[in-house]
Length: 69
Image (cartoon, rainbow, N blue to C red):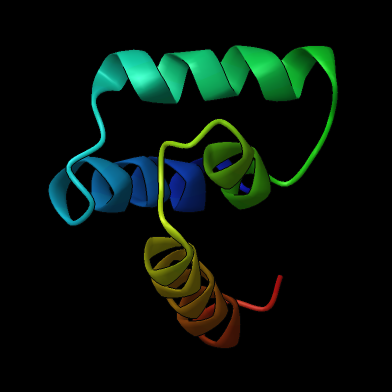
């Protein structure tokens, strides 16, 4: 994920889904140790519901359509 999109993604997670910075830090470390899609790790760790996971993918999809590079 591009740094600019990642920053917006973290903002979305904290503002829209009310995830704590600690939760995001845990997921970031987990992804660094064992590469996997961040949304799936959030769900696997029980930090988001399936409905929230769907919102995350919708958000990511809308950003990809705006900036395909």
